[in-house]
Length: 161
Image (cartoon, rainbow, N blue to C red):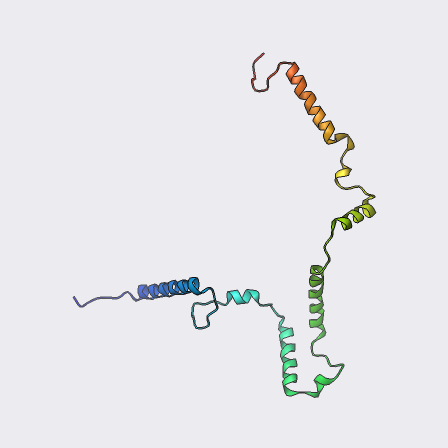
């Protein structure tokens, strides 16, 4: 009777399950905070918010940082360059994307001015055939209804004649 066997694989899985359950209970109670002590905490949330940097930019940054720490006289020169030209070129690629965000919004008066200048004052809706105006369509439909009523034809009864 003292020969009890413990399934170690199941015990490990069960322990992990309980730890996750406890972690979820704590998150529900105290909110979702990044705890460094928790082995199950992932860094995926913080990875999404971080900006991916170019390795060349990182290298240049650390080189500049080391110069600052050493108080190198080179950092006090006006014409000193701390970043390579390639990095500044890639940085200029980022600037147009931010400038697109800073474009001013187009208001109605701006749109009307644009239409007047580019299309001579005609909107896209005006380009449709002027013969097919809404009033003419309504009058055609009314004429069809009148004709159907006069002919005693009911569209709901197929073989009434």
